[in-house]
Length: 402
Image (cartoon, rainbow, N blue to C red; front, side):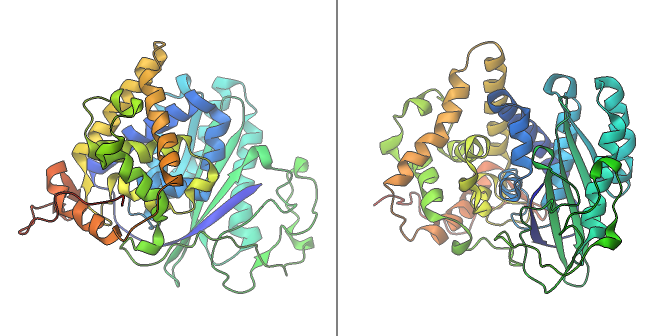
C-alpha cells in the first residue's frame, strides 16, 4: 500500500562533501537509534511517511523543500546502513539513474546471503516502479528507485519522478506490510496538487499479483487520485507560515531559556551548549515523535539549517557535536548504560510538555536573523562558502517566552 507522495520544486546541483559526510554520519545514528528503540519495522514505517522523510531531510541540513532531499538522503542512508547491514539487519538497494538499474542484482545478492526469496523481491521492486511510472500516468517520469529491505523480508520503496514542464518532482512511498495488491488500489493517498484528471489504472480489481501479471488494458482510467497536503512551495526562504511556531518555540525555549536549564535530561548532557541542545531536541523528535509531529517539515531545518543558506547556514560545529553525542549514547546503550540515550529521548518529551503551556510571540523573523548573525560562531557553511561575521551585531538574547 502506498503511504503517500510529495511534490517538491525541482533543484539541480550536488551536495558538497562537507555536508554529505555529516549527513551519512547523523543519518546512520538516527537509523540505529530507531532500530534499537523501536525495531526495523518501525524504521520502514517512518520511511514510508512522506512528512517524516521530509523532516529527516531537513534535520540533516538539506534544502528544506527541494527535490534534492530524496536523492541526498537516500544516498546518505545507503552508505551508512550498508556498511553495517549484518549488524542492523537492513539493506538499501538502488538509487538514482544507473544505480536504480542495479536494484535486481543487489536484491538477489542479499537474498543469497539471507535466504530470502530473491525472485519475489525483484518482482516487488519492478512492480512498484511499473505502477508509479506506467499504471499511474501523472506526468512524472521516474528517475530514482530505492528499495529498503529488512532481514525479515519486509520492505519499503522510495522513488521519485520528474516533470520537466512544471519543474517539479514527485516522491512516492510504499510499505510492504500494508500491501494487499499492486493492482487493487495500492495507494492510501498521493499528496500533491491536483493537476486535472490523471490515468490511474490501479483503481479496480485486476488479476492476482501472485501471478505477477499487470493486465493494465482491462482497467478504467477515469478516477482522480486522492490528495493530501504535502505540497512544498517554490520559495527558498523559510516563512513563518511554513512552521508551527508553538512546536518550534517549545524546542527553542528548552535549549535557550535559563529557567528550564535544570531539567535532569539537560544535566545528563552536561557540557553540551544551548545551540547543540536545540539541534539535539529536533533530532530527538525525528527519532521518537509520532506522525502528527511532522506536518511542518520546515521546522526541522532549525536543527542544522540548509546548504542554500535557508533558513540559515549549516552550523558545522553544532552538527559535529550532535553526531558525537548520539554516537556516544548509542555506544553506551550497547554496553548497558542507557542514561544518555534516555536523556536524548526525554528531550522530545520535555519539549512536548513545554509546548502545552507556550503561546508563541512574534519572534520568528528575529530568530532567523539571530541564527544568521551568529552562524559564523558555529562554523556556518553554505554552497557559496563560509558564513561571515556581520558588520552589525544582532541582539544577544532573544525573549522566547513572555
